[in-house]
Image 1 (cartoon, rainbow, N blue to C red):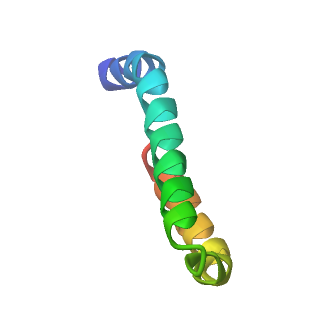
Image 2: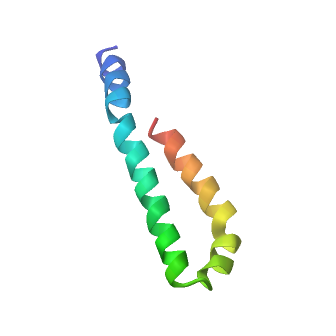
Amino acid sequence: MLILQYWQSEKERNRGHWEREILNFRLQIMEELEDSPSLNNHLNNKFLDCYQKGRKLASKHS
């Protein structure tokens, strides 16, 4: 029970950090795409697979 209480408090405390991390990664991707527009096709081909893997990973950590 103590672990559950700890995790709930950590989840709220770290939420802002996770949101900043996601925003930072999105900005990095946008910069890379501006520098190399040809990566856009590669991103379009890989997006669904990466998104599904990311969701699975996130669900295991929350």
